[in-house]
Length: 256
Image 1: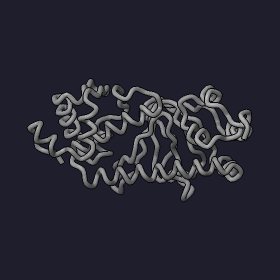
Image 2: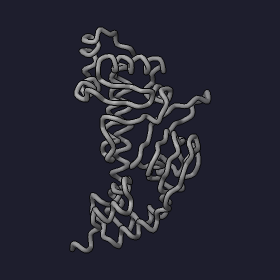
Image 3: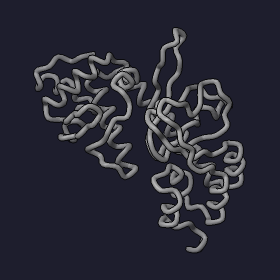
Image 4: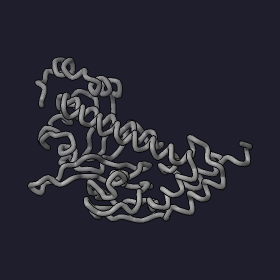
């Protein structure tokens, strides 16, 4: 493959800045003509207002979406009608792959703030991926990542005390944002504390109490939804099962 056959990083950045479509092509090096074919499939920016749906549970699979800006929560509905949040999606991530297996969405996606997405019609993407093996490989890799994330969340909820769950959540948000070029130690949480509590299987009061504890111990500075990480090493230690030593040293009883 010659240099003029491979799309350059600078060309891709000018085309889809801060977009998860990097994950579909850049690591494997698509030919310039293949990238142009992929680009022809993509429907450019679609704006979703806060609290509006990108898709709802049970709707047929039409597209997957790359988040350019904003954020979403995905959730299922319990038999009693209450929400069970299954994840939050940030800029540079994909939404909608939950529907690939059964051709219908298994959860709903609602915007947490005014957000912009690129829409990728799935039938066209699927057809194109059969013609471009590297593209198909990247789709499989992204689906594998989603499975890993689900497994990690199940482990977190099943085995970890409350302070470890919250520390892991904050650290995970930091790492995900940092991978997309945002600051790792200072960011706004677009989701409410109630939504965080729902995801982590905790009470809202526990979230508020633990955030206060983290702030008192110098791990974080919390100003409403704005989070500043002051001691990343201690937060990382707390997120990796060192919660019992944290509880003893801080003079606090573990909250489960």
